[in-house]
Length: 78
Image (cartoon, rainbow, N blue to C red; front, top):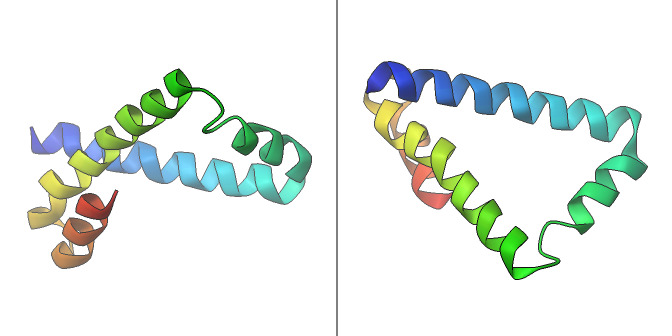
């Protein structure tokens, strides 16, 4: 279970880096994507559900990380 959580956290980090690069080089496309975030109930609930996956990964992997309290707090906040 911790190995899966570790890779979920790594993939989430790669996603955040990719989102940052998209915002840097193509801010219009990033704004268009962000505008859709809460536009319908289905998209809103899907976003919340998908956000729970990396949050659970952060909470599960917190004990094995270098900064467990930060991982735990960030995971529960998400």
